[in-house]
Amino acid sequence: MITADQLHSVLERKEALRGYLDIDNKKIQLEEEELRTQDPGFWEDSKRAEAQMKIVKELKKWIELYEDVDAAAEELQLSYEYIKEEIITEEELDTAYSKCFSLVEALEFRNMLRQEADQMGCILKINSGAGGTESQDWSSMLMRMYMRWAESNNYKLTISNLQDGDEAGIKTVTMQIEGDYAYGYLKGENGVHRLVRVSPYNAQGKRMTSFASVFVTPLIDDTIEIEINAADYTWDTFRSGGAGGQNVNKVETGVRLRYNYKDPDTGEVREILIENTESRSQLGNRENAMRLLRSMLYDIALQKRMAEQQKVENNKKKIEWGSQIRSYVFDDRRVKDHRTNYQTSDVNGVMDGEIDGFIKAYLMEFAAEENTEK
Image (cartoon, rainbow, N blue to C red; front, side, top):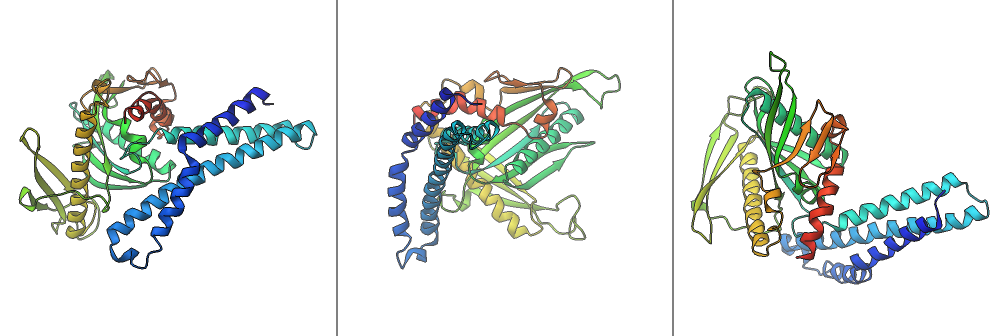
């Protein structure tokens, strides 16, 4: 049975959340924002209307989440009184406490994601490193891990580009993960992921090390304006590979977008290359490739702003893509994040998408710092 101190602690955290989230002002703001949607000409400018509806939806979500916590806390307080009168059992009290505690923790966790891009979906790209088949197999295992994570969190996942490995696995994959806060949760996955195992592709049964790079960028929507000069990009088309019926390999539906990005500060020009084979329609693939380009340009601008505000200077080496962030050592039953030192022996669980422990440890250590420097 829970103690009075446990009850007091969770109720204190609930009240603290009310202050952190500024719930009373959010309710007032929601009324004001909803009034704007009642204007007769509200939908005449669809982009502006969509942006306004996003504001309303976001405010409603925070209020609803807090109200769930508040209701659970009230139920817990009543349960604590009822146990004294023997109206409920100790098990029922403990269940009420577990429910309230979980909701408080979840809302505290979400409150860490207050950066501009955190609430967006994301683009997650995996590239196999040197090592041939072994690295390509490792990349496909990472792809499955993130697909399982997205599935368990009810996110919509679309594979926009996939290149199979020479013998097994994949060379590269680009996935779009759509849903609230997908980028905020997965931004800490940016970096090099290292696998150590006895390779099934090694005839001598030797222990081998493989690497794969993971890139995560925000997935923006049409409400965010990104200027793209038509003179700076070109298109190529190619035949999509893989299963898909008579159309595949006969019609050039795959698209390759090349964009010459010029750094506004240094004047340096570099090429951004995007391939898209998601749709059997060339038009659909072009539209999605442009969306991916806009997302990448948004991410570049976002990272520049963060650097200017010195938000990532203290842990820059820990989050840049070229550094090793996590090791998966299968033989030792150990997965360890080198930035937070969080580790687990549940290797199978991790490879089945159970990575919330790593996500939470990263946000606990770095997101709070970002928010205080905002």
